Length: 101
Image (spheres, rainbow, N blue to C red):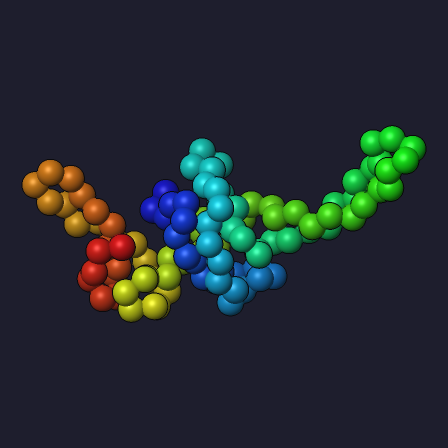
């Protein structure tokens, strides 16, 4: 998976197409990510005891990584992610501007 927790992404397909958000959590084995403000669903919560009321809360659900593109912090465009090796290790790079992400 080429995008990581903390990256800003753009949603490219689905009901939230065009929205930008920050990745809160990544699930590499499932190939899914949890994005702030994207794929929000309402969940009905039962009262735990008689004195408490039930509630309707909004929850973020994970989306597929294939529906998201990384937004480059340098050029600000949605881009694919490439890798550039160095002598010690490799780092992620923007395919549009070539800068390190």
